[in-house]
Image (tube, rainbow, N blue to C red; front, side, top):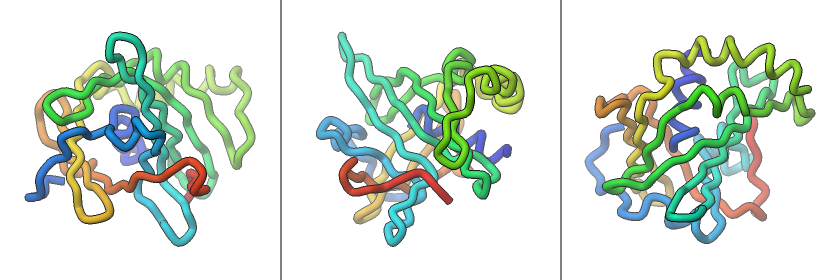
Length: 177
């Protein structure tokens, strides 16, 4: 579950490569597109789907549906947090209240909130080393896909690098293994 937690943290907030960073990292989101992480284009599956919405005074909210480990159980966590675009990167902090407010589904069926409340302390425990740390993701164009360059409190973490593509909601992409 540790790699899923790192991946989750980077997704809730959005690989060192030698390609230029995208100057408006969430530009496609402004036209309604979603980020599909680790895409399987033949099956239209993503390990996570992230959507951005703009609020008052330039605030940006990211909502992510994330496949949790083990993938075979089809546990999907939906979480939302505030982020900001700064110097070409999407930055935010994983907050305990965001994890506690997350919802879950197993094989497409909602998990009762009482069960979620019982499991959120375990999730928080696993993620505790990154709670309230600033996580920034710079998106790097790689042809038709993008890579992420992630920093946590200013320190590069190439082990959490992921690839993604932008997709439209009507294209039928879903979260799954």
